[in-house]
Amino acid sequence: MTPLDYEYLRKLLKDRSGLDLSADKQYLVESRLVPLARKAGLAGIPELVQKMKGGAEPLISDVVEAMTTNETFFFRDKIPFDHLKEAVLPKLAQARAARRSLRIWCAAASTGQEPYSIAMCIKEATALFSGWRIEIVGTDLSNEVLQKSRSGLYSQFEVQRGLPIQMLVKYFTQTGELWQLNADIRGMVQYRQLNLLNDFSQLGTFDIIFCRNVLIYFDQDTKANIFGRLSKMLEPDGVLALGAAESVVGITNTFRPYPDRRGLYQPNTGAAPVARAGLSPVAMRAVASAAR
Amino acid sequence: MRTCLVVDDSSVIRKVARRILEGLDFQIVEAEDGEKALEVCKRGLPDAVLLDWNMPVMDGYEFLGNLRRMPGGDVPKVVFCTTENDVAHIARALHAGANEYIMKPFDKDIVTAKFQEVGLI
Image (cartoon, rainbow over all chains, first blue to last red; front, side, top):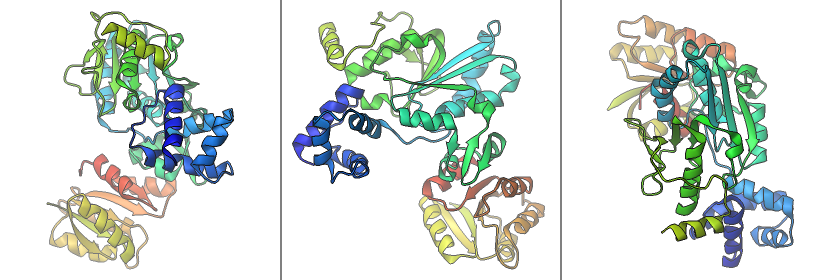
């Protein structure tokens, strides 16, 4: 891959998905795009780039998907789900007792393990939520991963990463070499394709938003813009969960840490308002510069 | 340092498991069947057992029953690690007192995740 090819891919990925690849990520590009090039009958990345420059839109979509799809597993990092079970769900069960409904958004659902982990947590808390209307929305940029999510089918390797064996037996059915989540858990989650760079206000408001391990790929201005718009999507007492390596500190004042629960945040109701609609990365940078 | 008893009739599997578990700071004791594993446990109970199902002399299921009946035998965390990958075997193992279950083939991430799940890491 020539430096020019890499620059072309960096710019395209930034514009299409917000993915902000640093100059030293050639290995990542090669590991993900060489197999894709071969699958398309091309010799390597230079030929792939040439074809993309010629306007091969399906191929461009495949490249964006390949670069933005991240490995995930059930109950990833464990701690956010412990927080959910121990603090967030009991508190919201009390706060929403009159309404008897909860809306939860997984903003980077990938292959579905995160929304389904949340669904299983809620199912386990039947005493709290019996008869409630629970709506879990899983969104991702990639249509391919959403298709897999909807099927609820996972390999033996996938069900062994993070999923306690008791939950495998309780919530999955073995189908040949694969394991499928039972229909009641699958039915708790709806999936939609969504690019976080675009306006997402049409999804409505939520009680809990999981937005983990996706904003790390965006630059600071894009992160600030997304945080601002996420804060408008949460109920005032709602909760945002970020990845273990992510934080709002130094990026936005629209969220404040949830007391004693690392990785969780709540809307900062006193923060300055931000634009509700999504912006292009270029426009977002301009807005951020003007504000400084 | 915590101890893990690796019970498998395959020396290759024992070697792979040893390498993974030593990387997780466990001291390893090996046994090639359930009977030898039981002798090890009579001398001193380990913190964890990584246990194959199908072995000559005494299989993993029978070993687990014997272990759980020993004084203090309910303490070690037992993680099955087997090619018996169907729900019936998993349910039987859990009923007999297994804490977790690994379906072969496995890798370091799976062993780590399962040992974390039962509080060994």
